Figure (cartoon, rainbow, N blue to C red):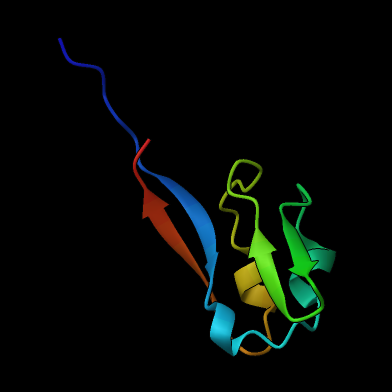
Length: 70
């Protein structure tokens, strides 16, 4: 029998539209989001649990939670 593969969710930032306000950084429970070089948010997907708090908090609506294989 083949093992069941579950799809996990991760945060993705639309980097060109990000204004680096830092709201996402403040609410991330795993510290997966950081502001890179003061110009945009970056997500460490190895730490991201896909909870969606960053996307909900983003005033520019440039963070999306997407399914990933694995």
